[in-house]
Amino acid sequence: MSPVGVFLDHEPVGEIFRTRHRGRERISFRYLDPWLASDAAFEIDPDLPLDRRTSAPTRGPLFGVLTDAAPDRWGRRLMQRRERHAAELDGRAVRSLSELDYVLGVSDRSRMGALRFEVDGTFVSTSEEVPPLVRLRELLHATTRVVEGEETASDLALVLAPGSSLGGARPKASVLDVDGELCIAKFPRPDDEYSVERWEMICNSLARAAGIRAAEMRLETVDERPILVSRRFDRRETHRIHYASAMTMLGLADGDEASYPEIAEVLNRHGSSPGDDLVELFRRMVFNICVADVDDHLRNHGFLRDSRGLRLSPAFDVNPVPMDIRPRVMSTAVTPDDFTGSLDAARSSAPYFDLTPARAEAIIEAVIEAIAGWSTMARRHGASSGECDRMESAFLTSAA
Image (tube, rainbow, N blue to C red):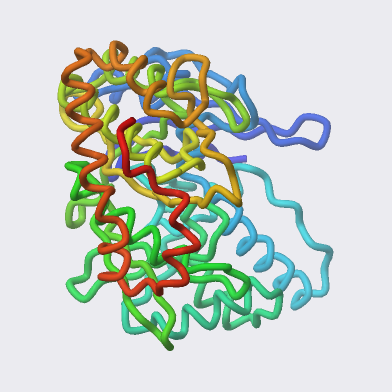
């Protein structure tokens, strides 16, 4: 098999080699000498030190940075459906996709982060177009049919390219905003008990009110259904920005547990502005506790690379969960060994963020003050009184 060239935007950095062993695909990676000699060189993954060795992943079939660029459940579903439809059309057996197939099958235009891939001198998956915002209605109906297992080939053609690049289990697609900037559109599911997209928008607005750097987003209404449109934070006009999840930077895999203090240590070791980002991370941890964002797993924390190191990416995928669905137990531990979503646990964790008790308490009080207005913010974004009653248990409005 031909090596797969690995690029950061337009800069070649390495090669992926593919072999098969007992029917399973195995990959390895090696940096290119010009990248190793460059003053701008950096490790694209903690498991890939800057040397001439050829390295293989040790925790699963892919390196973490490749997993960050790969589709999650929604994108994989789309690719599997496309393969099934193609096999039926060609009269052949359905082909099993390898983990690297999923990475390479993602639309080059909308792949997360700065990684790009080249085979035989040509970037892969460059033919797909990202639809403009005016096609939200078509995308909404197509994603609904995919969720219900009733999609057509034309539905897949519309949704696959813009949707395969995105993580998570819920329906979504990349779209171009009215100014041409790349965005993510998140769509409702027919079986939703409440408007997940609306409540993510509400939490985003509350996070900004609490002083958190959050992804830029807004709600669009199509056929009386809210669709969340979020600007991509890993793009600056046509420039792609390298992205790595907390899972990748901690050298962990799906199912592994970690804590906010461990994410703080990544900032201490690799951050370009650790002082500011440690305060920001503590503020986000407190906020996530107070809105019961209990799905705050390691893929929902990320870093963007600047010229000097890593910065926390804007906060994203913050969703409140009422207590009748899940208790206030976090997916990322508040202290090194306590997953309880309590403000007392946050207070005890403050030293890991280089915060005095007084400074930590001031941050907690500021977050609580912002969240105290949650019902007003919810109504501003169109939430009904019934939905507010349903979600009330998610919000902590007292620092006690």
